[in-house]
Length: 182
Image 1 (tube, rainbow, N blue to C red):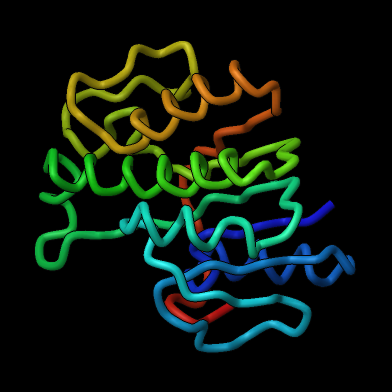
Image 2 (tube, rainbow, N blue to C red; image 1 turned 180 degrees about the horizontal axis):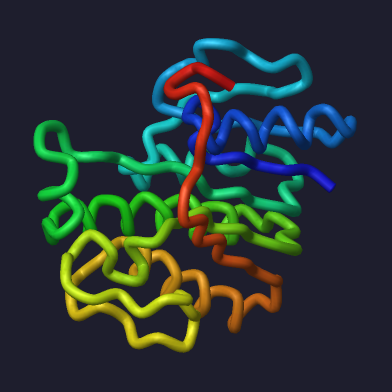
């Protein structure tokens, strides 16, 4: 087992990298920026996931990645909530995931499982209006372009082609120390 954590300098990615490293699992952590508190046992690499060519160039050097934890996000500066309905935001974050996953597959990574970390925006909580509780996977997708669905659809298609397992985690809330507060 060799884990790649995309977004390793963020709250979720840092916690995932630390958790795997604590078990002795080899971990590669990808991030645009270095972590505020590097974790012993994590091999950190800088990579801009928006750069498809850079992803293709980097993938062979990451080693035999069997598991991907994808917790990377590129938020739009300014009004965070408004950006969640911006098609450019959806396109950018969808492309980041596709760039990395496709590069790993092209490099022959022996992928066994991929986990996407999302949240309750998948249920439309940021759009206002009535949200049925409890939230269920069987609920219809909200009628707007969201990078969660771009990522999930790409993951489903590539998993069907390649036969690896996958999970989408939709936490209603994640608490922690903020940037660098792993």
